[in-house]
Length: 314
Image 1 (spheres, one colour):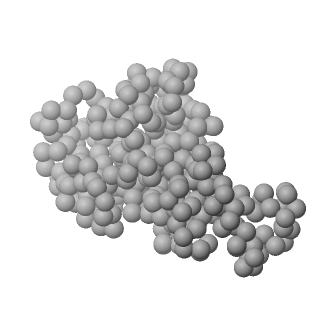
Image 2 (cartoon, rainbow, N blue to C red):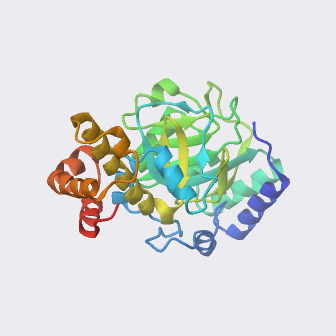
């Protein structure tokens, strides 16, 4: 179980105070301040709204590609690996993060949180409040401080609501119950630290759509979640399209290289070094002839293919 630092607790308390009547959230202005490089559309609360077409293309990006690309922009703390228990290991989870931070219950604070929630018109226990925030394309990401027994944030009933609201799954640095029931929700997936039959006790929601930590990663509301067998990477919203664009270029050159070696057109050595002008010319011709197939079978954006052909750059 992770230890909670005094600074982190203070930060969360400050966020709660700043939220005013909006229980456990931060203001739209604060969220915009935290995501200054995002220049696109935002949700009403200020959360970056990465377009659906970018999320669709992100499905095909590998963890390694995303990791390498965002590190080139100085983001070194966005990957959370370790012992994830995955409900459906073969299914990718991609979406915009809705974040929640939980802490061990402290009665006086919990009472104020509940009162604020009631004043805001929130209903049900605190662990349902993040679920009410979800819209299609979101991923519910929660820091449950690694708690397993009595730390199960959802069961199959809440899982059904999560999928209905988001069409997606969850990432919990904590636990869940009802694995069998959740596995029956077609399209739903969950990355959790453990499965446990207990029910949620002695936990309170300290932050909703606030910055959180998952493993070693810093996660902001609106980050693009890319969760695969390897682990989970949280991509800053302003880099999401950069990641899919650059990963598609990498994928195209890899497909061409593998095919060329298999067909005997070029050797592995020729493909694994700087390409000659003749090889580049063959590559651009291959792109032009196969762009529809590459789009349909490999999910690569036609705009990426056309841009490479037009600019003659790789």
